[in-house]
Structures are given as C-alpha cells and as structure tokens.
Length: 248
Image (cartoon, rainbow, N blue to C red):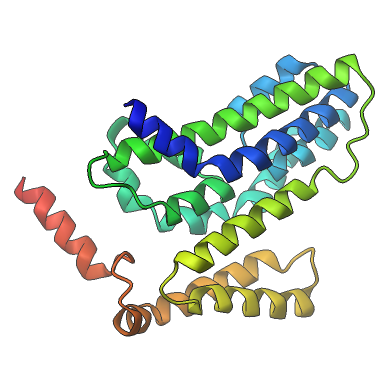
C-alpha cells in the first residue's frame, strides 16, 4: 500500500502545485465575501468544481437562487460529460469507488489518469482511486489555508489564478511527450481556435468540444490502425471485455 501511495503522490505533484495555490485563491475570495474557513472546507469537499467555485463566491454573496446556481454549474462544468465518456467502462469495474471516481473527475485529474502508466505489480484500480483522492485533498487543503490566511492577514491575490494556466501547460506537454500521435491534440487546438474566432470566448467551448469529439470518433479507427494506439479502447475491445466478464 505504501509503495502504491508513493507512486500516486509522485503522479499528482503537478496537480498539487496548482491546486494548493488555486485553492488558496478560492479560500481568500470566499473569506473576503464574508464566509469562514468552514464554508471553504465544505464547499471544496462537497461541490469540488474548480472554476465553478470561483463563480459560486459571487453567486452566494449576491443572493442568487438555487436555480441560477444549478444552471451556471451545468453550463460551466458540462465539459466533464466528454471526459467521463472515455472512462466510463474503467470506472464501472472499480466497484464501490465508481461514484466517487465520477464525482472527482476534474480537468486535472482526468489528464493525470490519461497519462499514468501503472506498474504491473500494482493494483491499477487502487492507483487511480488514490490519484483522484489526493487531488481532492490538495484542493480542500488549499481552500482552507486560503480562508485562514484571509482571516489573519491582508493578502493581495491578484494574478494567483495563473497557476491554473501553468498547470494545464505542464499537463499538456506531458501528454504531448507520451502520446504516440499528436493528431488528437492538434485537432483540439485547431478546432478550439477556429470556434474561438467564430463565436468568441463566451460561447465557443461547448460547440468546440462537440466538434472535436465527433471528428475524433470518426477518425478513431484510422488513428489506432496507423499509429498503433492500443490503449485506446475500440468497440470490439469493449465487447470482448463484457464477454469475459459474463464468462466469469
């Protein structure tokens, strides 16, 4: 268990560096809005929605209705639908951890789970669970620290949110180096830039994600065949896994 935990901690170091500082920024903003560190702990524990939590500070301080909060959350975090699709089969095999893995699948956790290569002597399910759990703990810890700092000393948090951008850059570069082909990454970049120019920053995200998913699904078989990306599950692989499970 200790060896597995050590491995999971090592994989999540980039997320730790980003989540601690971003969590502190969230805690500071929440405290300045009049909420104590208890609220920072509970929101990060139960909501755990990253950028949505920053929006939530304004909604709470402005007295927004539950309906408004729900709609905003759906709009901001709807991209997670696409992340979850690629892990649904793997999560189903994780038993009681299934629902927590869905709940804890943030942008950064998804990126780490995509790139991690679990040694054969370790339990992959346990490693994935520990990675998700550690990331969650990092975020909660940063949020509480930020709220406590805000209560004790004045603090200028301007620019601290750049840690999220830096974190995404590090994770992207790691995936770029590990990938057998850069076609999915280049497709995502080109489509995102195109829709950003056409629709503007306020409304480009969902259409761009839908187009990226459609293009990659249509070209999936070709990419696997040409570049030997055996780790990408095809329909045949999924059917074979179901057949083996039914046989057991």
